Image (cartoon, rainbow, N blue to C red):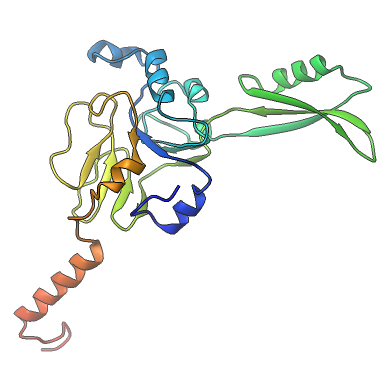
Length: 245
C-alpha cells in the first residue's frame, strides 16, 4: 500500500497492508446514543465495518469507541485509535499479546489452554507444541491476544504535509482534517472531512480511494502560507527585513 500525500514513515509502516480505512464515533453498545439517533445496532455496525475491512487492511478509528470488547470483533491487520472525549485511559485500548509455556509432563493440551484463559480472559488463544534443551523439554506454548488497537494516540496525529487525523474538528487552514465528534453536520470547507458514522455512514472511508482524488490539491501548506505572509509584510515595510528600521 502506498498512499499519496502520506509521509514515507507511515507508508513504510503500512506497506504490507492492502488498504486503509477510517471511521469514527462507533459508540458500541451506547444505549443513550442509540435512543437519540436512527443508527444501526452494534452487531450491524460491526458487520458493516467488517464487510469493507479485511485482515490485510489498516483500520483507523478516530475515537469514541464505546464498549471496548467490541473492538476485538473488528477485522484489520493493523488497528489504530485516535482517542475521543469518551475514551479514557490509553492502556485500556492497547493491544497486548501474552505468551506462556506449560510443561507437557504436567499439563494436557486442554489444561494448558484452560489455565491461560483463567490468567488472561476474553482473548483470542493459540496453542502449539514447543521443544527446548532445558526444562521444560517439551511444552505447550500458549498465546493470548486481546485483539485491541496496535497503536493508541491520545491526541491528533499529522500523517502528511496536508493531512491530519483527530477526533474533534480542528480549526485551521493548512491541512485536511479527518475527524468525527460531530454527529449532525457534514464538512462545509476543504479543510475538514467528518467520518462520524452518523454523518458519513456505517461503512468506513476508504482512504486509498479518497486520497487518489486529490482532496488536498487546493490546500496551501503551512510553510507556503508562512512564506507568503512574511513576503506581504516585507512589502509593506518597503522591502526591509523585520529587524531593520
